[in-house]
Each structure stands twice: as C-alpha cells, then as structure tokens.
Image (tube, rainbow, N blue to C red):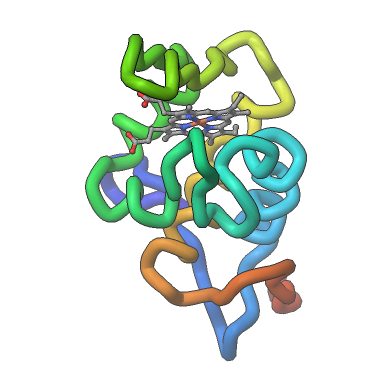
Length: 121
Ligand code: HEC
C-alpha cells in the first residue's frame, strides 16, 4: 500500500505486521543491520534509522540509499553510506525496508522479528 503521494505505508494489526513490512525486516537484516545495528537502533559509526525516519521523508530516504553518502573527516574518519542503486536485492525492496523502519520509528512495533498477520487476499 502507498498513500496518494506514493509513500509506502505499513500496517500493524494486534501487534502483527503486513507482508511488506515483514519482508522489510528481513531485507534490513541482510543489507543494513551490519552497519545500522539491530532493529534500526544504530551503531558506533552509522546512525539509528529509527531516529532518522522521524526527520527525513521517504524521498530523502530513497535518495540516500540509492546514491549513498560520504561524510568526510571528523575525529573518527570518513563515514560512508554505500550506494545501493545497482543492488537489486535492495532496490526492489526499498519500499518494504522503509515500511519496516517507519513502523519501528513510529514505535508501532518492538525489537526483533515481527509477526505477520494473514492477509485476506
Ligand atoms: C557499510 C555500512 C552501511 C551499510 C551496509 C548501510 N549503511 Fe546507511 N549509512 C551508513 C553511514 C556511515 C551513514 C551516515 C553517513 C553520513 O554521516 O552522512 C548512513 C546513512 C544512512 C541514511 C541517512 C540517515 C540520516 O539520518 O540522514 C539512511 C536513510 C541509510 N543510511 C539507510 C540505509 C539502508 C536502508 C541500508 C540497507 C539497505 C543501509 N543504510 C546500509 C552506513 C551504512
């Protein structure tokens, strides 16, 4: 599901998530977790995306993931967000990764693997 502007929407029912959000969890775990920490909570060198998504919108999120970003310098050296624009495992699942992280950011789901609800369709 998306809204009128094309922004992906998640759904949570009785603490369980829709298929897309669940898929987003799995994709996050395989592509983003290594840097952004478990459950979107951040690490010593990459920001907590649960916080980022309170600040940036879907289009900004998609831009950074597609094109990457390098933050030069600082006492701890360069901070590099890789470019995923040519990685189909990420690009075809970008909306779902956003759904999952947005649900986490909105505190609609907790830590760990979410449960899926069965959809009628
Ligand atoms: C190799 C480590 C690494 C991986 C893997 C990685 N990131 Fe990042 N990401 C970073 C770093 C470091 C930054 C901060 C860059 C900066 O300071 O400008 C960042 C920044 C971001 C931002 C911007 C956050 C903000 O507050 O502006 C988003 C969104 C993001 N990453 C999403 C993702 C997603 C989604 C994935 C998985 C598909 C992912 N990242 C995988 C290291 C990584």
